[in-house]
Image (cartoon, rainbow, N blue to C red; front, top):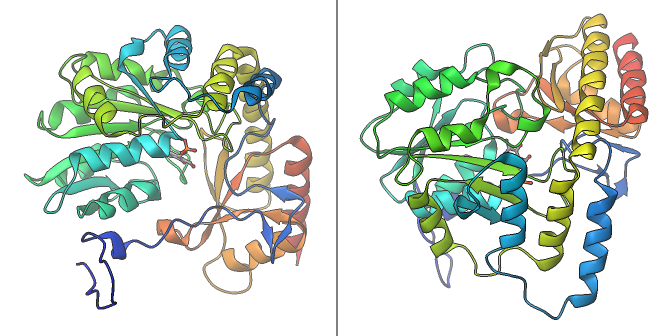
Length: 373
Ligand SMILES: Cc1ncc(COP(=O)(O)O)c(C=O)c1O
């Protein structure tokens, strides 16, 4: 229900004032930057030096508008992923693509379905459009296709599914996503948000882009979203993309800003996409460190949700002194910022990004100390 608005001046559309603004992972306390930021699932190894070089070179031409179609970037993405560049839509972060999809397909009276601990932005985007959000229960912190299907009714227009999911770090195999798609009505759009896909090493994950083509390349109902913010290490640049059927790409291109990606972002994105060696290095680092962190966290007697991504959800006691709030404060006192996830319905957990070896060592040292107190 939209809250009554009784202030003077223009009123926003229904739903807007129901939104609690997104709170990003903190980078410090009281304006002081912490030594280690493990709160935003950023890249542990920075970004490709080639991306920085391309960004700097583009800086000498800032008076020129970018190519509004971002053709060079779409071509680079298409080459690396084996896709049709005409069906790639780029955005200022995958966030913009998610927002555009909501704006295009949701309105008052419509419903969007997501999972209980799904990424927060879906609900914010749906609410801003005046649509309802229905949350399907998860099983063992993992999306459950049958539970999602139970939430669908005639008002459902979109299912948003993060695969892998943030903040749980779990995933559904390709076969389950296909089962979900096959059980949905044709006019329900399935959006598979693959922000963390590159960190996956389970073969049953498959290639998410194939879903788009297999369920209708011309008049289809699956969109896959991807980002440069995670393994590519370009969160500050704001760059993401969606792979769409022709009908959806056409809709998103009508409503996006005509120059939504800046010229330096296009240039850096092309260079980053072409540096797959960097991506591989980052993936290898993450796999090794993720295994090490999970082993050490488990060794301390703490529960965690086994992760396929670049973060781990760790459980702290829900009473007594070793609560998530106490752990968060202790880690912050040692210069380590992690993410509280109460807003995701997980008040007893902290989400810890997998960082550089140094950052992870600092986190493990502080965690040892906290558990020993
Ligand atoms: C699941 C998921 N999707 C999308 C995003 C948005 O990322 P960006 O807008 O930086 O591409 C994030 C960021 O944390 C995420 O965790």
